[in-house]
Structures are given as C-alpha cells and as structure tokens.
Image (cartoon, rainbow, N blue to C red; front, top):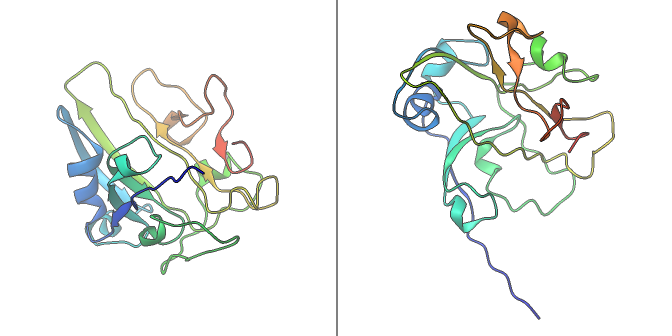
Length: 184
C-alpha cells in the first residue's frame, strides 16, 4: 500500500486584476499598462470571483509554486478537491462571447475570464509558464461543452488571425492545435 498526501492549493481572490498583473503575472523588466478584466478597465480595479493568485503549488502536482488562476467559475474552488462529476460554482457576474475565443471553439462562448494588457519589455525575450485545467475534464471531453484557452500575443512583426493581428500561443506542444477540454 502506498499512501500519497498532498497539501491543498491556496487561492486568494481578494486582489484586483490590476494588482495581480502588476505584482504576480509580470516580472522585472516588464511594464504593463491598459489592464482590462473581461474587456473592461473598470473591472480590473475591483476584486472579481474569476481571478486570483495561488500559492502552495509545490505541495501539489502543478509544477508551479505560485501564480495566477483564471476561471470561468469562482476561483476560490480551484484548490479542490475535484472529487465529484459535474461540480460547478458559476461566476456571480457571467460575461459571454469573445471574438477570439469563438475562433477556437465550435460551441458558444459562455462565462469568459479574460485579462488583457499592453506591455513594454526592457529585454528581447519574454516567457510564460501556464497550466490548463478544467472542471469539465474528463466527464465532458468530446461533448458539446468545451472549455477553451487562448493566450493572444500581438505587436510588431506578429501577424495572426485574431484581434490586433494577434497569434494564439496556447497550443498543444509541437502542434497548431488550440488548448481545450476536447483537445487535451
């Protein structure tokens, strides 16, 4: 018999999206401006139930000690456990439709959680580690419900099919397949 123990993920949703971008998402040498949450500058200035920061990731199997969590539902439940099929904690302020996410899915887009910002970097390279997780997986995989994820990057010398000529860089490794419940 093997016993495995894990510490819970600690999620804090008491921080505004603006503070999260400035203090957690970007590192030194990057200056963010024009921070929006769900398409709104004012949404970024108040706490929202769909965005927070996590710590204690080293006590889990995430591979990241800390970071930002975005959810189509309430992030306070992201720490789990995910021990029942179909568990859901919908956001208190649902926003539907996003033109770029709609290009990634053949289904309607519901309960978006988007963070957008412009940035200037003093370096020549940027990096972003991310993890995709979904309450819909695995029980809704290959169904008409599918959580999709996009990380859209735009700027000089970038030519893509999304808003502002952006490219989606949230792809399955070594493919051009967007990340979703149905593709993982």
